[in-house]
Image (cartoon, rainbow, N blue to C red):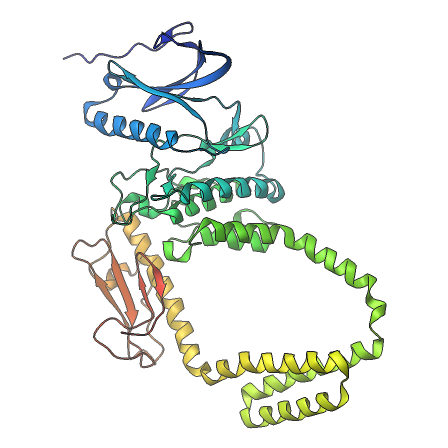
Amino acid sequence: MMQKFHVMLNPGDKVRDRFRVERKIGGGAFGTVYLVSDDMRPLMKWALKEITEMDLPEEERRDAVHLFTREAEILRSLNHPGLPQILDFFSENDSHYLVMEYIEGKTLEEIMKDRSAAFPHLEVLPWALQICEILKYLHGIKPEPVIFRDLKPSNIMVGSDGRLRLIDFGIARYFSPRKTKDTFFLGTPGFSPPEQYGRGQSDARSDIFALGATLYYLLSRAEMEKYSIKFPPLNTVAPGIPEWLEKIVMRCLSVNPGERYQSVPTLLEDLRNRQFSVDEKEGDQAASSGQAGGLQSSQMSRIAWVAIAIVIAFVITLAFPPAGCLWVLIGAIYLFVSMKGCEKVLIIAAICMLAAILLPNFLRSPQQGRLTGCKSNLKNIGTALEMYSTDNAGQYPRKLSEITPNYLLTLPTCTQAGKVTYEYNVSKKLDYYTTWCNGYYHRECGVPNYPQYDSVNGLIEKPCQ
């Protein structure tokens, strides 16, 4: 049986006896977008998005129409300057139409193609802040946050006014805490996190991963598809990027959602503070240089020597506790006698603060050394398990040993001279796991000891129950 195809709209055609087609402006596998005018609002231009069922393969038709309808429902409920305004949504015969605000401008992907190099970080940073503000709005919608799920340069439009807008809500969804997995495994390789491919439900942290991938691309011009979900450090592909910015981007790109930023407001705060910290530091330096005459050189010298003595005392405390504590006591008495006014209060407060910080660490330092090694090993094993899952349709191995040697050269041992090893539990469906180390410094109990590492929350640290 010959398949029928819908005839594409031409300039001058009218839809719903109201929207006049001017020209085609875009399209994809599931629809076409036209620039139209509205007889009821002749001074404004709109984008008409059309999806026609007869143009789609029968096996894809139901899902495509569902996603298109959900896009319309979500957009109609939103109101933010970073999102397109919706005018109308309707169906005629076998076609479905969405009329939305026409945004004149270029996508970040189009702007990148017009360049011969990546963007400087000072140009990317304001974009990052704008995107964060839009995501903050989406994730803050009650009772169910909206997860965009397809954040990438080609879905970010830079308008003629310089303002960013998110476009194409085709696979956006409402977050439901009752679900454990997404219904549709959709996304863009290189920009979508692993949980969008069948390993869990996408949430706010999924959009944070995609934002990290977008910033990675804009700052490096890297070929994102070849990295999939495991990215090399940003400074290896984009030398000269500030260290603080690299750390922010790479945290966003953590394979395990539990190791990413857990909310956009936290990420936004880091971006804002890091962006302006250089200016604030320079301002503080300028102010302090203008007030330097307020401190006499003898005072500064005395405080410097006292600071050195405090550092030496605490180093000795860590190596030889009794002798170090005696040094601290003698130093405190000397300072109390020799210092005057605010100097005395300042130095004594500093000693008390350092003592409160360092002494507890000293008391538990032997255990902490082993615990740090355990955490590092757990993270390496977790990364190897996620890489295994990427190559095996979202499934995790039945045994921990299956990740060697292709994903991890050898399984590490715990810190008791190799006498204990890491243990592993995986669900019957092989869709989530937990791994831990039964080292001698853990409490014994009937459930996996802590710290442990799982496929949903990453590293978990709490007392063994």
